Length: 378
Image 1 (cartoon, helix red, strand yellow):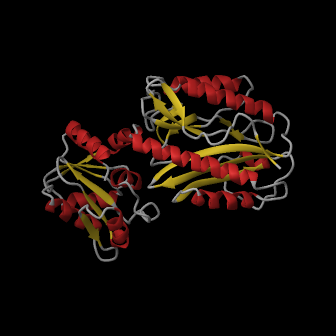
Image 2 (tube, helix red, strand yellow):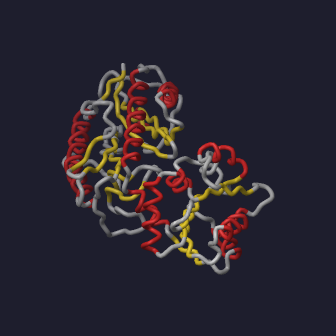
């Protein structure tokens, strides 16, 4: 476990007068433990948790199927294991907490992740404990990245960027979206990622669709191609999106792309500690309006252990809090994506990058490819 993250949790417990914090989501297990129990994100009932007491030694809790993986990744951390087909995991968790002297404690839980039935049983097994929601606190802690987290996200950004660049360089007219995906996914692993998420390959008329996977559609002269992928290491993820054309750019593609590039540098210039998320978004909208292009409800978001994290550079900077705003803070890491899916010309464009907020501005992390000009295929 990383001491910098444990120190943040100790600070949270002091502020909230908690005796322990117990994570239950894959992203917050990864935040504390430094790795993800592989099947937890796929099978919600396979609970994996990190238990961090105030001032005490942390422990881990997992299903028997993941015991060997967790022990390999955290050999020196106390581990409580529940059996998938014979134990009630909440009863085992309660017994573990009792053994740590927490049966009557104030316990911080992720109430937006733990299933209602699990919560009810845990409360029944711990009748003298106070179960308190800390999901928003954990989300807030994750917004501000440590130097190690920034370095990892930079690596992930460049892996995604290079893999997309290599996949677009490998295909020609007549090849298919699946051919792009084949090169792309192989390169993600070759470049060092452990996994990937949200593979998007959208060409021609399909480039107008936000989140679609590859098909057998063949690349044709004049196609616009949007390709996006998130590379993953240790539960952390970073994604980029690149736009290309096949042999010849269709009418208005280069003009619209120049506007996306203008928006990219305008966002980089405006992002700094204290900047308003809403104001950055409104500037983006105003630039799209110069070409009558419709926006979506955001142009950027936090990124790290989730595809999308607070804050959003958009209409609602903090999820669940419409009508508010949020300031940009130093050491946030944001994915930002000047885009327009419905340009009105039969194609969509997107230029997604990742940045790190520094003391006096922002630094681009996904800097493998020069995206000031549209990428040419063939």
